[in-house]
Length: 447
Image (cartoon, rainbow, N blue to C red; front, side):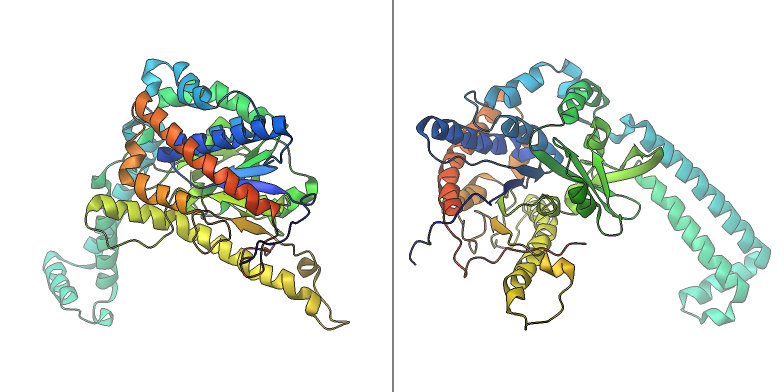
């Protein structure tokens, strides 16, 4: 296929979305540092740079994103600020980031209050059952129930038995213990609070988004720091019915938006004076693409750290857990990409409507959104080197590879090498027009 023609870049608004988790931070930092080094050299030589207008990612990616976007063409490497300095300031106890859930007072409060209520319900069900049957009748009714006897034959006793069964099962559930298997260390939360508050209070520079999921109704909340979106953008981010929360990020929101069930129980946060419980936003989409589109993105550079390619069947528990994470984070993301593809079709074909045809204003506002996804072999920006890196270097154990400074440095260097190759390929794609047969990721359905 011939190289596509050059495209005017003055109207491009390029944004960056990074998918990943805690085990990918050092790889991502290396890739972003390669982008920084490319821009620094390009500035000196007068070549084109990759300028990012906004970004999104899970909470683990916010620090490297903030460092990169604060100085996209800096001379100094990001290695020390992310790998060394941020840990050097921490007290010894804060170096252990995860502890048992018993360190959370709110977990104990929820557990004990629920346990007490469960005991009350069990006692009430027992009294109700005793009021409707004698011991002999109870035995007979139990036998009939186990034989699937029609409920109509049991009357009040059958209803009381059902209540008793439900109350007993609810009570037994508390034998499983406190919610979650791990919790963020309170020493870590306290130690990082001041630095995070300073980072999130910045009101200049590119806007960086992450998200959280409300535990009570699964609604998505958008969190951001950097420049405030315009009033029109804020309205788009909240949705037509204002059903979505848009909040400036705080340290409290930061940790709550990283609470991944079933490992970490939802965490309490205060919003407008009311307590909500949040869990990881990545369950809705990792990374969130919609807020980037709402602030006017024309091109999204999407960096995945969870493999999208087909894989063989799983052979052990570690592989099964790895595949579970791939599905958990890729399926919602793929849903957003499919919506973008559909609306690209609408945006591209609205001009072919018959003259005089009425068109809702929302359809008239459709715009082309191009996603550059080097991990997707069907994407125009597919990078065999990046896909090989995902297959070869990233697996379930890579989440636990950053346990020593030496291993973290190796991960950073590997990311830098991959990023150096990737930035050159992406720059070429961004400077060229996207061939129609590859332009499958444009448009978006606003709320």
